[in-house]
Length: 124
Image (cartoon, rainbow, N blue to C red):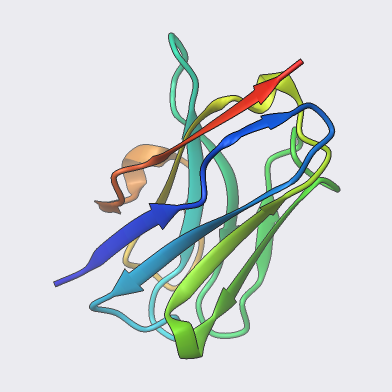
């Protein structure tokens, strides 16, 4: 059974940093890509970053390029999202998900397994 569990969300001031974790089970990073998504109140869920299986190619939304970094630790079965220079507009519930494919799909509906989410709030 595929499972994903996010943690690390918190209240942080603008300009600060957070590291989110996505603990996974039931699959290998050699087989499936993992993505991070976020959803702010009243807005659609959007992709933030993704890491493909195998070599681990990474992809970022334009809004987070240069500030966020996705990585993974195979030994710990965990995917991370390091978020620096946080802004109030980064406030959202953050989710990790897998599309059960080797490459990163672009749209949230293409991801089939999701975690429960973790709240990130950035104060001005």
